[in-house]
Amino acid sequence: MTLPLDLEPKFKIKYDQTHGSPYDRGGADSYYGRNFDPHYWPEGTQKGTRVDMKDMTPVEITAYTKGYNDNEDEGHFKEW
Image (cartoon, rainbow, N blue to C red; front, side, top):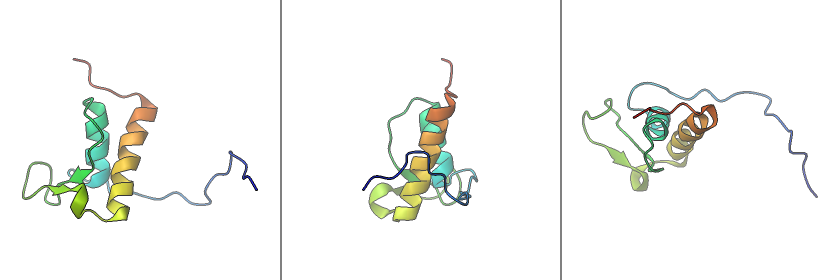
């Protein structure tokens, strides 16, 4: 059994986009041309303790991945 490729979800997931969130960090890593490296900063970027993938929940890793992929799809990259 195969499913049609054009299936769209009935609802859109809203990701926390605050500075330092998994979604934000994924987008920033893509924007700056960094490798895919799931992480986030719960107190804001470069504040407090960085949370690496080994300590992230599946939902947090999904949010990071979505942020990274959204930016890749938009093609919004830092011009050096």
